[in-house]
Length: 340
Image (cartoon, rainbow, N blue to C red; front, side, top):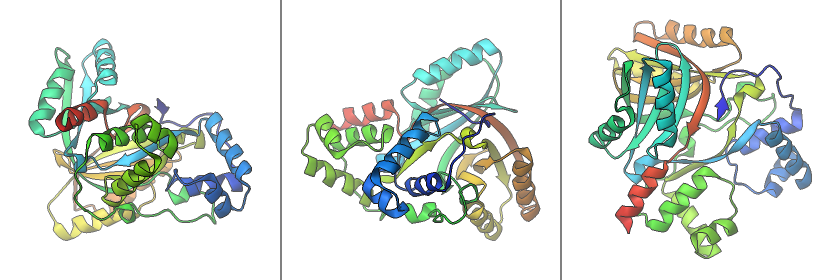
């Protein structure tokens, strides 16, 4: 569970802390000795500083970014406004416990919940969604199918101390789109490492009952074929005085200007994550900012540059991430039954 609004007591990092954080944001699985070499510190110093970041709850874990399309799944985002507080509480409990729900965010705004459901197709989604909201009343709901990720950052450069390495573009992290048939061990490996990206080769090998060499080969194969995209730390942005808000955008049809719009999303440091969607809205953005003034500056800049393109937009102010996984337990169970 992560709070998405700034904490009153902000964590203070020194130059060496920023060096370490900048290094692990793109690859959290690299050995401590390698990180130490890059940031010009001892291994023990890097280990101690990372431990402090955990204790201060700046880093809340490590996740593996999985390309769910490679596994035959899509992400369906539903935005809801429950009719009563009691029904919202009931829906929250169901979503937390539902194996097919991989993300759950609380908002203030027109919608108060965002629920991400992983499903094989639209019919599968509708069946799971009907089960989730059965006998729950809500004022309004909105469905969006996630088509393509446009940009994704762990922590934008503008919030990292000057002089540190620039963040890689999400597009550079994509591997060759080689086809690869997964087996049951691959699926179990993906689920295990998605929840804890820095598990050692030895612990993963023991867990999956394979040799260490076989485990390394499987991981390398999953990285090369684009099933595994990245190993990243889960950052508690509120500890740095940062907040995250969602923006839903509906565009007019203009191919050239839409390309410019997507380039803006890729290059705008305040856009933490953005995706093209199918539904009433065409794009979903998560915007990171240090205060409302900075957030409104980003929105105004967007509106100014694409005044004729943007038909309408909706802002949702996030305050808590209740659940977030890159693949869900239910998805793994479905794939496992299919592969047995």
